[in-house]
Length: 133
Image (cartoon, rainbow, N blue to C red; front, side, top):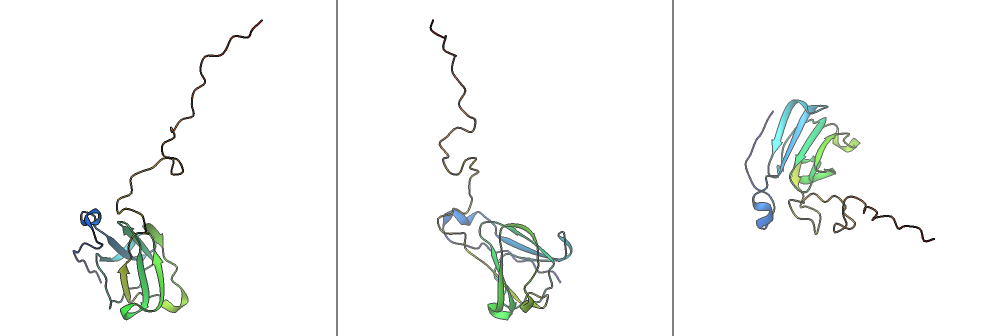
């Protein structure tokens, strides 16, 4: 069963250009039947074994319709799914989660996140001083 929708999730101008998407796969390694979501799906039925999340923020997957029962979160990137016991192997509802607080929708690459103003390479030693003597 495959479902595709087109919707932009999120708020504000930073997220307006970004497409958020969850693709669930019936087999590990992003293979098999796929079910793609771009907005919340309060009543669905799919048995995923792997997932891929694109866009800022993660997705909440729940064992019951309308976001009930056990729920788990899938973060950005790709993942093999090991659903908790309460899921019985099926996802019945899913919805996008907002990006973490203070994080822009599109995060620029930062090579040194602790002190981004420092150079990426260590400072080179200047000319060696001549010994006095």
